[in-house]
Length: 277
Image (cartoon, rainbow, N blue to C red; front, side, top):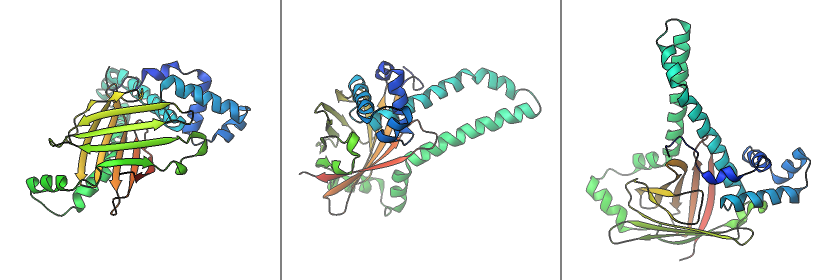
């Protein structure tokens, strides 16, 4: 499956009503405002969201809403690719039509370039502010301290009550060969458990993810500094999200900044973790 195809076949199981509710959730509505808009009760909206999570295996309604929104944007890109031959023909014609087609292409390139720039802005800024080092010395320094290594627990009290998981834990372990093993467990509001495990080098090369999380099947890692890890998750060759993990100076707390793929203007979301051990 190519990078322009659907991000998850599991989304095909959603009903039209479930999709409508999820799209409203992605647009910023709450369960209460969705219930008012659709003239339904809040329990019925929550039940629809629970059904959607069960079908797709995604533990968070808001995350599922973003995945659906990302799929919509990838589908638009497919439509654009099917019109390439017509656009090429237009570019060969003189006059205003040629200028219009060229302007459209430049605009699209600018949009995708801006999205890519935002996704890796955190990584680039860390490279620019770091003290100058020889490449070998920087590599050695990055592995002398491992502030990220260990187990972390999500501060679920900061999550909206209607989608709050019971527990989310992330564990990072660094092997002698400098590969990183990441283990994630999510226990949803209804008690269902999802888990994922992967082992990857810090070279940005995607590797498979084992477990039962239907929304992802690959992960790649980069480490711009000892207290920062950049993780990109994908499904069927399509980016799902990029997550930047940054440990505080006291090494007792960690932030996770999430950049969701598929949006014309990426939005940033931050969650907070506390060290377990």
